[in-house]
Amino acid sequence: MFDSIKNALEGGGVRIADGGSFLISESATSSASGLVSHFLSFGVADNRHVCFVSLQHTWGHYCNIGSKFGVNLRQQAAEGKVKVIEGLKLMSEVLKNDFQEADHPFSFILEPSEQPLRNLYHVIRRTVEPWRENDERFVLVIDGVSSLLNLGVLSSQIEIFVNYCRTLIEGNNNSDYLGVLVIVTKSCGKDEDASLIINSLAQCCVVHMSLEALSTGFSREIHGNLRFIFNHTSPHHALPDVQLFQYKMEDKNIKLFAPGTSASVL
Image (cartoon, rainbow, N blue to C red; front, top):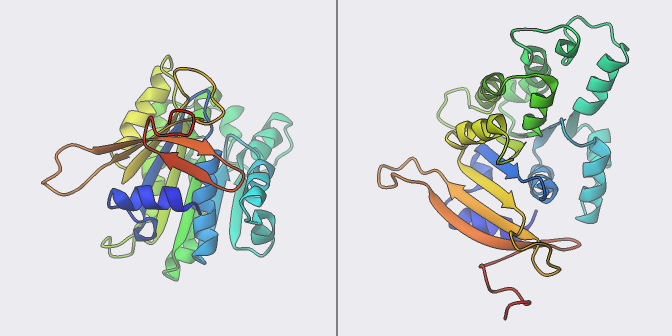
């Protein structure tokens, strides 16, 4: 976990431990891998179960990043504390016709369906259901939902899928959250469907964390902008609160600072 991210969230009145839905969007020239690692390491450090659905990167990619930040995700998975649904591996099975299950999560690639993500949702639900039944808190991370657009899934179908996943983190009495849901998507100004997904999901999340590269180009001291957009349920906050930081990815940390206050400027 990164103290800088934790402090920025709590500065906006948000504690990850309280649960809820979090949206992370990355631009074509920025990477959300560090923020994803933050939520994965939170689940591990807080002794929560973790379900990680990788649709954009391999599981090994995040294991390598986690090791840089001092979190052994491979060991956590081997011990059953982290459950991984490897989307890229499952897609490969379908493309190679190396599967027999009628309810394979990505069978819609070869056999079009009106509800293409239903089987994937059922896999996720079966994974987290034992935790829900025992009132055990957990973290559900779905990485790269916008990549499903490349498989012919409609933006509206992705939104429905995420809404169903959101119900999984609700407590039995709907008065508290059992889990934390983290949705990762990619933003592209020219992709209307990707923008629709972000705009729709952002309205239902506790906070939207938006990563953007610098408009001025590459910098060794500043890697990009990180915008926190907080959605408040209080009637005193009609509009979201927005906090803008610039960030630098370090070996074992994400450094945040106010725009214009980096070492290269001062």
